[in-house]
Amino acid sequence: MPKVVDHEKLRGEVAEGAAQLFLRRGYSALGMREIAEQLGVSKSALYHYFPSKRALFDAAGRVAVARMASAFIRPSGPEVGIDAAVSAILIGVKALDANARDEIALLIDYLRTVEGDAAARRGIAEANAALETSIAAIVGTAKASLVLSLCYGFLLQRVLAGESVDFARFENELRELLRVSASPSRWATSPR
Image (cartoon, rainbow, N blue to C red; front, side, top):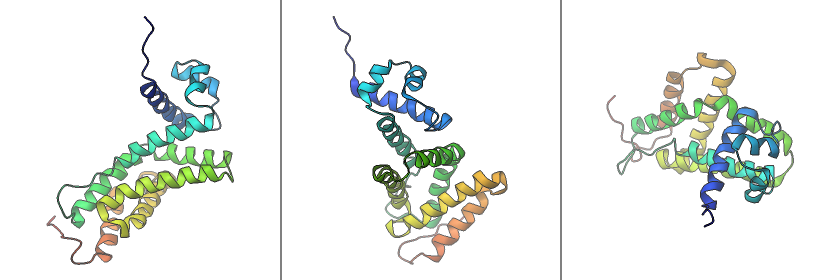
């Protein structure tokens, strides 16, 4: 009897494994042959699921972005106060911080490789939108882009300056940003 293969599951596992490889090695340093070897699949099987390295990278990117977006979890309850929002965003940023250096390096490597490619830019815009949507669930759509920009800036500062840029500073800046832009009906502050 022939072996039954769950193709969607295998495709997802390959994309997940490729996401980790791209993160460790970069986009331009990997070829499909090496990716297949590292993932323990044949090159023809890899091409069956992903017709190009770019298609594999896109799928791996969707896996990585879904993981990053899921780090931002909306607190329960009908209204999210400033303290709860700050805590939720801080948890998400701490989760992203672990791989920020590699993620930034990978993104720059990829952008250099696909320079001027409109489809690549759309993929990055979609990734950004997914993160913004997760943050919007916590702080509202009006503030989501600004909060995401603060998150990106903080993570980049941590990559460039290291531990001297600490989470307490980010927390205070985020709290101030939300407090300044708050409308009385949107935020219910809770005691610290």
